[in-house]
Image (cartoon, rainbow, N blue to C red; front, side):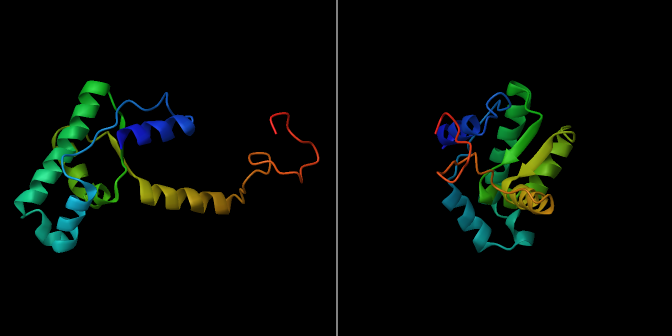
Length: 138
């Protein structure tokens, strides 16, 4: 999975910004099983969920300390469920300045901004025969 993430980061032109890609011990299916099984109020009382959260926070802190990450993107939907708990744990560890970004809300906000700015797909980005001035690379 980390290789796929790195590949897309390069495709998006953000390779110079990426300092770390980390994975937790449990799979997303394993993690989601506990999320669906327990209500939010009960989750942190389950030892397996606490272990998952500790692993997430440990990876976040390692990225901050070892690779000097200044923002953390929680990319997997099950991880995004723990945003509040991760934020609290990072604050308690002294990393309150680190930005936590969840992909889904960020994507929704980006879509809203694009709609509000009336930004559309640029025809030259995916050129067709309908362009009057055809790019050389076509």
